[in-house]
Image (cartoon, rainbow, N blue to C red):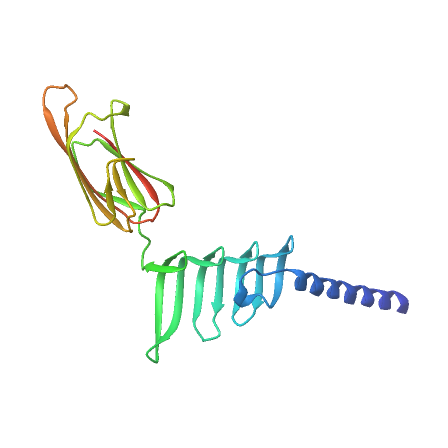
Length: 225
C-alpha cells in the first residue's frame, strides 16, 4: 500500500515537472512578454488561454504565439489595455487606460491594427449620394492605396461616357493605366460626374456619385448606370 502511494506521488511529481517543462518550451512571439509563459500550447507556441511575462505582462487568449482573442496587457510603464486582440495587435472593442499630464485617462471603443479609431466601428465605405446610377459596387482587392473606377452598362463594362469629372480628397488623378486616383490616404472622399446616353439612346443624362472609403487598401468602385 505504501509503495502504491509512493509510486502515485512520484508519478504526480513527474507529470507536474513534464507540464512545467512543456510550458517553458512553449514560445510567445511577442518580445515584451516572451520571457515566461504558463498556459495552453500547440506545436510549441502559446495557443489558447494563458499568461505571459517579460518587461510587460499579458493574461488572456493566445493563437500561434501571439495575443489573439480577449485579454489584458499591462505595460511596464503602467498603461493597461483590456479587450480584443488579433495577431498581437489591438483589434476590436477595448479599453486603454493611461496617464496623461499626471491624470488617469481612458480610450474606450474600437481598435484596428493597434490604432484607436473611435467609439464606434466605421463602415469600410459609405455611399453618400447617387443620381442616375442604379447600383454601386465597392470592392477591396489589395493593399496598395488607390481607388479605381469602372463603368458598367447592360451587364458589361462600358466606355460610352463623356465629360468625366473626378474629385478626390487626396492622391493623384490617373487616367492612363486606370481611371481613378493613386497614392491616396484614407479616409478617401470621392466624387464622380459624367454624361452618358440613357437606356433608350434617345437623350444624354448626367450621372453623379459621392462616396467615402474609410478602410485603407486597393479599391475598385463600379458604377452601374
